Amino acid sequence: MEAHIQIDVDLPRVQAGSNPQHLVLGLFTDYWFEAEGHLPSAVLVELLTEFDNTPASARSAIARLARRNVLESTREGRRTFYRLAPTADRVLERIQRRVVEFGTEDRAWDGSWTTVMFSVPDDQRDLRYVVKTRLRWLGYAPLYDGVWVSPHADHDQTVELFESVDVGNATVLRSKVTYAVNRGDPLTAWDVAAIHASYEEFIAEFEPLLDRVEHGLVGTAEALVARTNVKDAWRELVSMDPELPASLLPPGWPGRRAQRVFARIYDGLGPLAEARVRQILAKHAPALVAKASHRTTTSTPPSKT
Image (cartoon, rainbow, N blue to C red; front, side, top):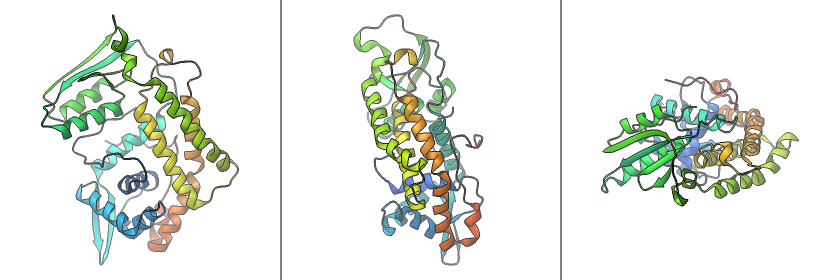
């Protein structure tokens, strides 16, 4: 399960709500992942307005992604077309794989913890934010200041992270706990009760939608928005939960139930959401309609290198 994110890709910071820059990236990932060529800016703008963004904010988000070199552009006359830059495409594919594979099976655990110790100078706050964000995505949480732990984090991806940034000092260990008192227990690095509550909230919010999906009560426009919303909410859970070993969790853990809700909505709404994308494409670029497609939780392409 890959989750490495290269430092040289200037993806926008994750924010709550329908952030238009993240929506653009999600739309490319979900419906233009196998297509060759660029999408007209008019298509991207109209897709973003489906999520209650104004045309002006949509165009601004697209322009910012282009300035970040996350999108590549080309022009034909007065029209501008965009596609994901190859580096961003690879990173987003790895994130997609992590999102759809998360929680699908119990991961074996040998009782060892990966421990990271690092220091970043006080005048490099942006670097500290980057390192901490990526460590969390890899499944770490802070046990002490500058000491982060994880039950499953990949050693090679962790080393790659530190090698890709000028972090100063870093150490990566894989070891078992021989003594821990109170807050020294690695499990206390996570608020297990909060993670449990977040899973329950996810289930309560999206199970009614799943019922409507399974009874055919969702149209194409709603499907596009709802499918993105459930994926964004699930991704937030993925960033919270390092897939703590079952032996450390209380009985009745709701993670697997929440994963099934996500997968059934994401897969069930795929054809309808794709139809909405094609409807918008037909208004601005009929020749591109057949290139749009949707992916499922079980049809993620092989990792891009």
